[in-house]
Image (cartoon, rainbow over all chains, first blue to last red; front, top):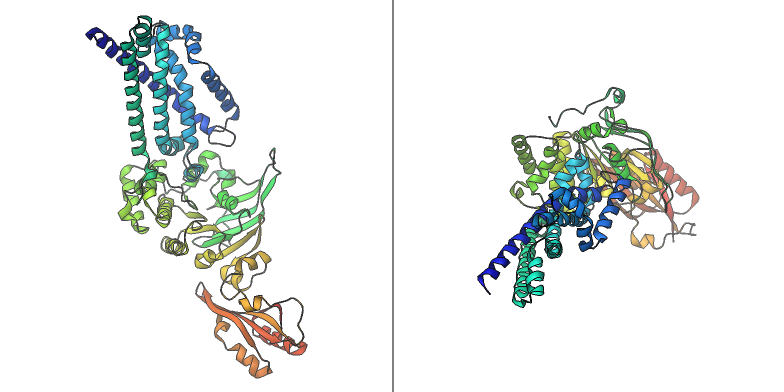
Length: 221
Length: 369
């Protein structure tokens, strides 16, 4: 493999990590409150707002059921509005974030719903406000599950990031298509696949280890 | 904000203290129904509840599951709202408070739970500190408050452990320390020992009794076990299908139960249970030439008097002792005897009159050959 190709692969890896990590960070920033709200706003729950819950739930489902490649194309005007352009690595962060947010919200919702209702009751009995219950009980208790969910989200986004190559998004997927497929360079394709496998493995085992460390339920006397 | 300040009393919620009894918790004509839903009819969880909890006492509410105990105890800290009536806690009608005011009132009411409800992500220390953090207490005060509480419940050496590393009894001790952190006026105990084995139950009840005695803390507890009531309560209310069917002094209730539900709760208590050989033969109709089975309850000073030998001597009636026990509740002795008396009208009536004259309670249970 020539040094130029190696440099291309390195650059593509950096681009992929950049897109995925920024999209995950933004997706978490938006998805965390959304997920917590979805988990606590059915009738009779902490922030009881069944109507808003239903509407947000519908939007989340609609976004998640749109195939990512169609989402990327469909929101090009929005991407241009936010990023100033619809082409390039930075622009690709916009559709990635739009896809990541509802996904992360659902994962966080599931993790928060796992928290024992008895803990919410205990916190209420102590005189905690709903926001205190979220900050001091729900999120800390759901944290191991949230970390596992975010790990899953990062792995999925690494996959999604390969698709944004289609609209000039750059990154490993783009490199694989342009060099490996269109220029008949199977060794580039092979290298891209290997790097992706290593990335996913690394992210997964990092997430698993962090979740395990945060989970105090598994300790025994 | 100080955490042990008196609960704010809004002008219209203030209730003048009752002159005849200093009750820290008072239920007045309380009812609670849950509205009908798509696939369930309306549920009347509580009706016509009148109950007073004297300051610094331990009051128990006993009932089977579904009797409304959980709803009743949750009315005290406003986790449930009644559909009618008032719940007055230390002079404040908590049913009329808005959520915000209610939150500060809750800081003066501790609560312990059947399943402990500890945060798995927090250490023992941090679990006990949680109510103080919620109240906005500074870290120094939290240290000063939590450490003595861990000493009190005997877990000072476990402060850095997580709940998963503790036994059930230790978890409940953390729960109790947590409930005391804000120096409450009232402690609510929601089946606190129901998930524990008998020995651990004993030690947790001892701890609650100690707290009541040394801190003068009022405890309202709910349970389905008479043994819990007997061990620590001074007053008791029996709840059945959402109504209080009997209430009063624990000693009176144990020795003179009036209601069928109360009797069934007492059935397994010492001296009240029929010996197996009697239980298998007893029948409701008289047996010719047989005996009448009578339960005699001795209360207070009579518990140690030789009444039966007097009965035999003075009336010449043979008394056949079938079973019994002498025990004490809250330091007051009482005895229960199950005896067989000859089944001929006149001597049975004389015997019952003799016992009644000595202020003993008798109850004809049935007949045996």
